[in-house]
Length: 86
Image 1 (cartoon, rainbow, N blue to C red):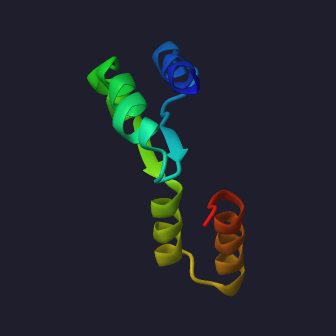
Image 2 (cartoon, one colour):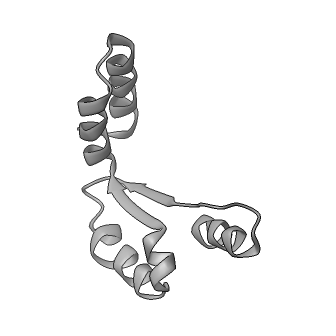
């Protein structure tokens, strides 16, 4: 729903840019194999371009590449411990 709302705000001219980032855990095969592909098929090309899907695990790996200070690493560790169940 947030994706549709955000994109409608672009169309109305309320904002210039909008990207929806959908975060989900790698183990959630329902999102990866069914829900997200089916949702994206309903979108226009512009809608698809504003919709980004990424797993928590991939996001945290990317964050470790770009955020390297001790404080930033502690924050990534906190997020990983909060959202990833090993």
